[in-house]
Image 1 (cartoon, rainbow, N blue to C red):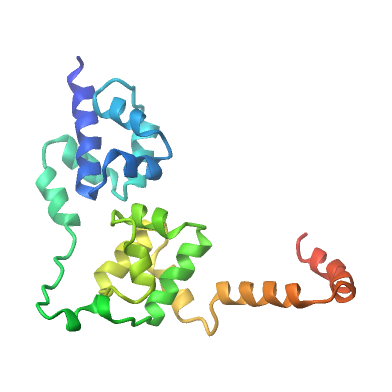
Image 2 (cartoon, rainbow, N blue to C red; image 1 turned 120 degrees about the vertical axis):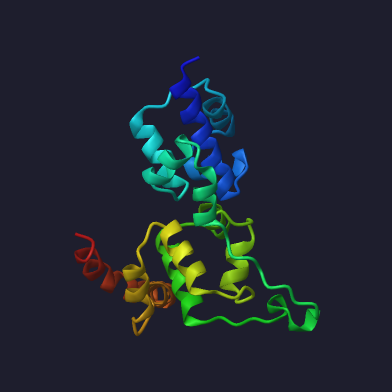
Amino acid sequence: MNNDIVKTALAIKKLREIKGLNRKAASVLLEIGHKSIERIENCRAPLNEERIAKYVSRYGFTMEDFNLCLNGHVTQVRDKYSPEKPKVIENNRLRRSYKRIVTKEVKTLQVLRRLKRLTQHKASVYCGYHRSAIGHIENGRIELTPKKVKHIVEAFGYTMADFEYHFKSDQFITDIQENCINIIRALSEEKLKAVYPLLQTFNK
């Protein structure tokens, strides 16, 4: 078997493992079946440059990271993306999971997720977290550090500039959308028919 094919498959596999994903979770990110991932990692499915770049990006890495893995520098990539170690708290009453602190940072991350139309489960997969992690974050049960915020923002496909834009907004766009929907739902049939032509003009 061609040595380059083996090295490529191994590098793709290492990126998945660094992300902390099993094949089933990875299949959600790559939008292919987990059996296909198995074939790729076992050198039974061809990979062209376009597919490699797509999978590397979906895993949240750069081509530089891929090339490092390709050349055997897996530890260097792993150290770069190693998650922060959680603080060990002996007293359960002091644990963050016993509290609910929903900050504006948390709300902003929720807005970004909803704009991407990601479920909490799928968003967790994108971030390489346990399936319930984003739910706990949005419920204010997990403390957010700047590093963690940046990781989530970029995993969603945004930049920190996007995050800052929504964070500094007087009103979140998703709240405006919900308010508009609630207003429309509360309208009588007569009023709804009256505003419908106006609403259509905004859809052009």
